[in-house]
Length: 357
Image (cartoon, rainbow, N blue to C red; front, side, top):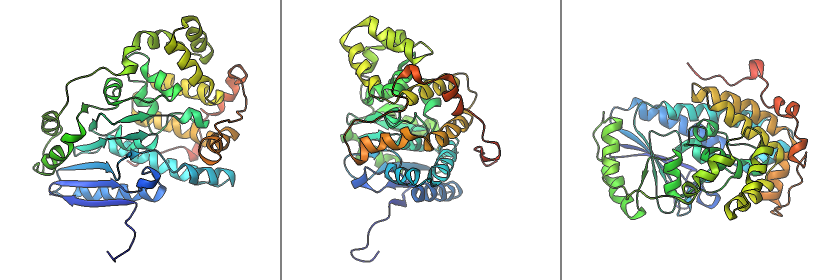
């Protein structure tokens, strides 16, 4: 590399037996671009074909986190210009999410620091998911007029009780222990243990299986802990068991506890349209037979979101102008009709998401 040349947004290299993927946009919290998505696909193909690569290791550059999600600014500009970045980016990203879930070699995601949205798509479907005392996992998409995508509806709908529904609708942050409890991660370690664990992973032999890889990781794990959301599991299960947002809100209002009031405030800040679409997708995901089934539904809904005013307005208020005062349309939950929600579920014909055979 020439002196002074910028490093690539994705660093791909071999370290011992590990094929390393390092997201390398630390100033942008390693936000995922379309180009990075394509480069990850190429790297995964190469690592799979290389008999000297025992496993894949996903990590993020910098101290702040693995990945804060997709390139929201790029999607915002494309949506405003009625472009097609959403259609292209989400198609390729969701196909990658499914590829990660079925990857034939151990795929280890180091979920230190912030992991949001598209970051969960890269890490949440890994065979081995490691969190730390610094982990902050969230799917805050409903606050952007969107919904938990990248297979988020599949993952959250399989959490114990209704804690996945709670996290999906409120966008609240889960710490390391809660992330394990929800099923978005497997092992909690201290960040101080990571260098030694990372070294041990690079020294594994080609052909190592998932069980042997997990055994190595567990040698470094911290004692089990309870997270703050898990402590409120009973209330969450009771309030979020309903199949309409209106009933969930009413249940929280009846409870009246401090946690219920805080949760209500979080819901009131979200896009009414996003809340209803997200809840519908989470409920449809529960009996789903595969991640791919959920990703197809998410893709249909995502393209409808991309064309909606709420998506542009949500990003404007949160990311562009940062006034935190979005003007949602409709502005009230009760005005989001079943007909509106149905538009997000309609098949796209020959434009539907299709996975490579």
